Length: 411
Image (cartoon, rainbow, N blue to C red; front, side, top):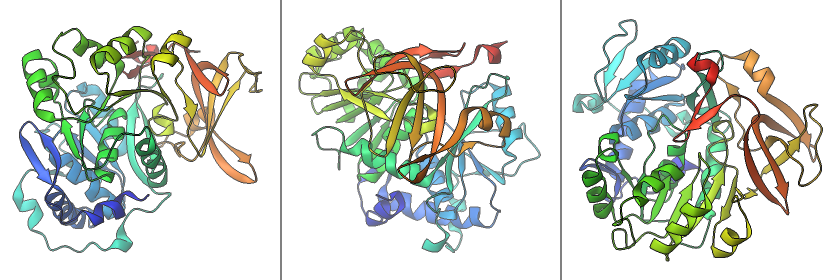
C-alpha cells in the first residue's frame, strides 16, 4: 500500500475526508488544496515544514502537501508549552511555518496562514515525480528528552505505509468508507493511526478538539453525532468516558472496533467495554513513537481477559522482530524479563540532528541476509507463547495520558 497513490484514487470523491467542529473537507477538496499548497512548499527548499494548529482540517491539507512536495512535516499543537515550541522551532529551523492559528512571536521565520483561500490560488506545478520517496522522512514528531530538549523522531514514508497496511488488516470489521474517531492531537503519534488508516480507506476522520473533550456535554453530543465505527484512543480516555453511564452502544450503535495504544489497558476497563459494547472488538497495542505508533496487537476477548492479568500487548506485526535483552544486550530466555528491542521495517531512521542519542538508541542488524534498523526502547517486558507483555520502564521515564515525560526534562 502507498498512501498518496491510494488518495489519488479518491481525488474526485465527494465523501468527507475530515470533520472538525462542524467544519469539513471532502476528498476532492483535500486533494486539490494539497496540490496547490504543495506547489508553494516546493519553491521553498528541502528543509522540514512546521505545521501549527489544533485539529484543523487544513492541517491534513498541509501534511499531504508536504508529502507531495517531497519534504517532511513537523506537527506542533497549540496546547504545547511555549518553551517546547521554541525548542522545536530552533531545532528544525524550518523553511516555512504553516499555521491555522496565530503564532506571532517568532519573527525570524516565514509564516503562511493556510486557512486563507488566497493560498490556494497558485498555479499547480507539482508532478508525481516530486512526491516523497519510500526512504524519505514523511514526518518528524517530537517527544520529551532526558536532557530537557525534545527529540524529533523521523519516520519514513515506507514505514508509515507498512504500519497503515497492517493496522487496516486487524480484525474482521469493515474499515473502508466508515468513520474514525480522532482523540489525540496531531503532534502525538497515536493520531497517526486514526489519521492515515482513515485516509488510506476513503473514510472520514471525526476529530474531537481539546475543548470538546473537556466538556462532557459537548463530548457526548459529538460522539453521538459522529456515527463512529473505529475508535482510536489512549485507554485513559476510554476510562474517562466510561465514568458516564450513557457511554454505551446506544450512544455509538455503529462502533465495531476499539484500538488502544500509548498506555496500559487494564482488565477492568476491557470488561466494562465488553459489557457496554458487545458488538465491538477491543485491540490492545504496543509501540513507541520510534517504531511508527505500534508493532504488536492482540484481540482482547473474554477468553484473553480471563486468562491474563495483566493483559498482554500482543503478537508482533509482519516485518518486525522483537527481542528481549539483558543489560549486556544478550537475548534472554522466553518468559524472562529484559529490555524490549525492536527491529524491522517501521523503525525510525533516528532522531533529527541528534547523533549522540542516535548512537545510544538505534543500531543496524543483519536479519536473514538483510539489513534492518533496530531500536532499544528502554521499556521492560517479556515474551511468553509468542505474546509480548509490557512491564514498565527501565529508566525514569513516565507516561501521562499516553505522553512520554522524562523526569530529567521536568528538572
